[in-house]
Image (cartoon, rainbow, N blue to C red):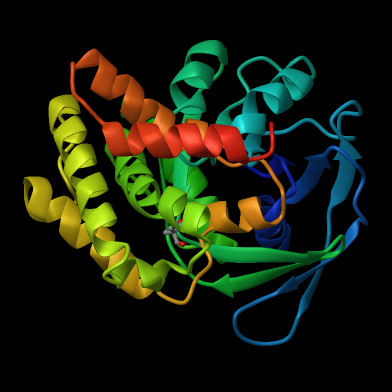
Length: 306
Ligand code: KPL
């Protein structure tokens, strides 16, 4: 496996910016590619210690960076991923690995099929937010898991996990990223649409007004995921999914979930990537999912168009 030292990070949102600036601090050459040019001098505010200044090459989707990438990280929101891929893919050397950082389980199978080189997917619990064109706050440490949907490209996944770890982002290569992506999707499906619709913080889902709705959604997704052969990370069946969702609600009680922030800011939401795959699976297995369908319809009507 050859070294991975040059990175294009396409999608300079909070996670894209965090990855780019951490990689730049780890001795890598990094380009940040977005719809508009950002300042090359960027600031990373870590959870501890003084702010860190980093230099990255900043370009736009129609102007390729001044160096070829050893890997491309696609860090856009799920709904923007394919357009961003289309914009950069023609400039890529053959066989360049692609790493997908999207939520949900929508673009991952499609881009894995379309991209001619190796494709890895990532799921992360790192917390970050953008504070301005030249700065990102690394709000809290998490963990990133990396792997290919079919469990292949193990050496590449291990190499990349090492590169991210040495840059200050804890990361592990796994052979079951497909299952891990569904775990995160289940949590996002149980929390995000409801809090976005009712404009509440995650912890308010524990209140009598919302608790039954969360339980009903967990029951729907547990049935669908059982039919798909996806088991919860701990425990079994419905109880395992309930434990996972309520654990995250508890741990993030004070948070405004990403989908609520998108609704409040008038941005498109990721409902298609999160609820869409569950509804498609319900349809394939002939299962009813009235709560999930109703939330999907509400978000399709009320969120800003993509
Ligand atoms: O991932 C999240 C999000 O905000 O998208 C959760 C886990 C729901 C925390 O808020």
